[in-house]
Length: 401
Image (cartoon, rainbow, N blue to C red):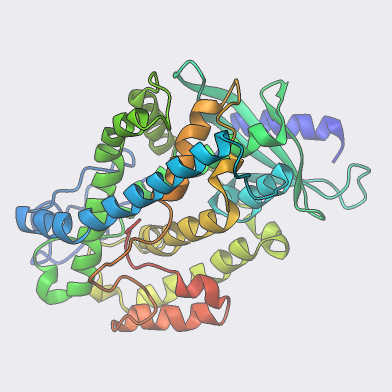
């Protein structure tokens, strides 16, 4: 792709970012339509709006809340110790190449949907894939939520490393791009998965007899969305007190990024299959998705009011986004909190890495496709293992991290 064509593609990306429309629940029998379940089309995605009755709310607080609290408490305490030791010069981060980590974040994870185009096979520039992020939300070091018109990252598909990156007209370093991409992975991009998952559930009381496993998964998903959107920012003052975030860090700026990400919907990705030879994550998702939806159609009567695509996003895609986050960013100290432009995002990024990415400890209910007794989940898991067993073993049946 010539430089002229590339610039034209950038301009086109600004103007023609197709979005994924909201979902409409299929029409159901009257005896199934109860309470909050409805067939009206939603105006936009929403992460925290589904009603939960008191007893399900209490159940989730008792069987999920303590586990989630222990995960972030232990993780953040460990981070606090490492940060202190690092400042004293007693430890160092694991050796890493930020350009390589940027390549992983773009290719191996849900940010791959921002793949837009690649150079021609005979290009003098090499085999370069362009990832474009329109209206990219971030938080600056004045603790303000901002958006740039276009964040563009070029990845060399042979080395799988960043070639260059720009925010609008400003060239940024690989370390800066790492912070921006990680922050988007855990915030503006990831909340879309949480929000869309609300269309892949049914937590009506009738499900207790019709499909109790679906009811359990739905309740967990709704409650974790509540924890993530409404309660998460309440912990920021604690992390400030521990010295892991500056005192001026603004929780409302983060909520602004969350809301922007949800309202912005999902970047169209019609060319995503071009990345299959270059990404094990993209290959797994692209091959499993039609198999998942095919099995879903076979068991459709077991999932009334559930949209198959939204269920795929809220189970397979969301859980593996967490799994691959943990793989891609091995050390939270890779995020540069001293960066004069993006240090605020690095502070949050370190905390999320250690306290909100990994599996919750000590859960007392089943939440994996692997080992599930319901025939739908069993069938999907068996098909997934034939593609990639590591990913298959880490697929959750609900949002539980």
